[in-house]
Length: 206
Ligand SMILES: N[C@@H](CCC(=O)N[C@@H](CS)C(=O)NCC(=O)O)C(=O)O
Image (tube, rainbow, N blue to C red; front, side):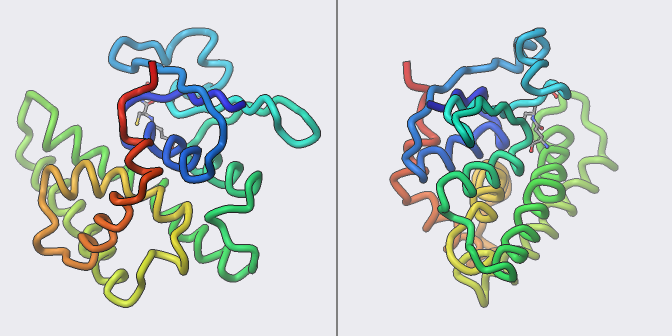
């Protein structure tokens, strides 16, 4: 059984997507970051930087209990645990890593700034709004061009695709619209249609 400490944010959906795709038994532990539940002493033991998501795998290698934070590390851990959505071939794996790290370090991080400055901030700061609007459109365009010649970002559907889906869904589709990015829309819609993804984006189980 894996405990998944999470909330309804871009990074929060990532481990849920992978757990559902791999059909791994898991329990959702909501951590309401709006109410600062990520600052409790108990949660800080799992995630010293007070960020969701985190997991506790009670059936880790050799029966060990494994605690892990950082969505990219969680993706790789679950992929290696199950042998799913991560190729065995070293070169193919390096390409998945490239896009996984782009997703975790660049795409989500900068999309979050778009969310903060353009969508949510009550105080409007025109220079920041202009900057992050241009940044996210540039990233959507980068993905769109790449996906013109590739069905998924790195070979078969993988953890790299899962790492970028949440911000394409939340900001690309809902805030900007994918009309100018037809290849990205095709990619998004194919992932959105997957039953595991539908489950992962559903309400927390009660
Ligand atoms: N690099 C981290 C980022 C995680 C992150 O940004 N988490 C946000 C929610 S999406 C959070 O927990 N924020 C609360 C805080 O910083 O106190 C990852 O990929 O897991």
